[in-house]
Image 1 (cartoon, rainbow, N blue to C red):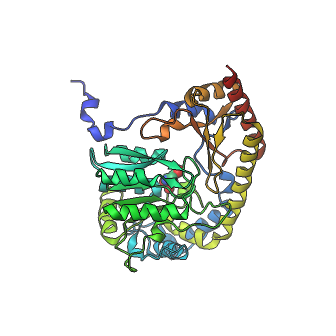
Image 2 (cartoon, rainbow, N blue to C red):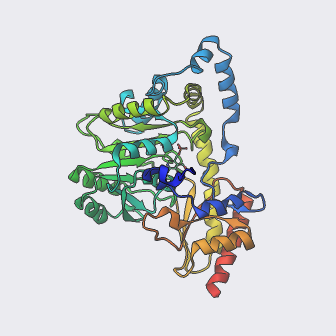
Image 3 (cartoon, helix red, strand yellow):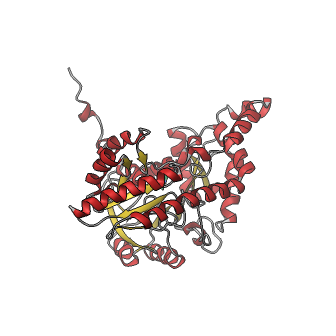
Length: 405
Ligand SMILES: Cc1ncc(COP(=O)(O)O)c(C=O)c1O
């Protein structure tokens, strides 16, 4: 008898969909395409020499080498968690190592938090637009999305308040250099978000993936840092996701969740059941590399990405026709483009790839309500400055031609 695979697969798994955009963007990997579509760091900035030395030192050491190739505890290596706790404390968010779980990238953190807090129909508040990978992780649990609109200072508080007043008790937010818009919250808005969440006893999942990639101005405290309740590290409302993917290398697959202890305890059980722990050797390497590299390497990244952001911003200023606007991110990897209402960025992508050999990500994919048809995400992280200038010019010419049609 033939197996009906679709009927065997549970509804949670069937909720995952492939995206036609993803298929289209596979073509963007061809060298002749100038791609602003990637969501990845610039590989030229990976600290290769440090990794070479650190992996070599480790595997060349009889004791540390063998220990780093062994199983280890599900919470993550205490030394690495202590490094993260110290780094958080330096950013004003003092926590104990018992508040930290090492995960396989922040993405696994999102998946674990989805399994911990979401179930079919349960509401979760998302920024409009929001990080696509988070929506994919959440969608497995078939929650109900409540989108809140954003202005330049962060989420509109009246909308957040209404979402909580209507029963939502979880919000997923990215206050620093958001993927996909590059926008950050002002200090006042951070405080207002926290106050609103506390008013309703709602929890906040704070994605801090890009927080260290700050190119100007003072770094504002994270929601986690502002979430102090009488010095009690387990009484807060914020759970934060961190990662070394943007500051060292994504292939390390080292991320972490910082949360009140009861949450971490439950997550540790899930980690044990799921994949036991994150690669011991990669945790050890991440600790040694971070100790050796930071903060100088962060400054190298900031300088390199700031220069690319400036080049892309200037190219947009010089070439984009009337009616197109874009974000002015103070950090991160992305600029968010808003096109005239009559231009559909999905259709534009097909033409841009075919005629102009330029790729970007149409913005609609980042909206939980399928709005944003005239928006696009541009990454300035991976292309050279020459190709950024050329690619923006080609895109601007195409948009101008469409505007005239
Ligand atoms: C906002 C955001 N959060 C989380 C992640 C996942 O990062 P990783 O799993 O590599 O730590 C990404 C990756 O692009 C991201 O942009």
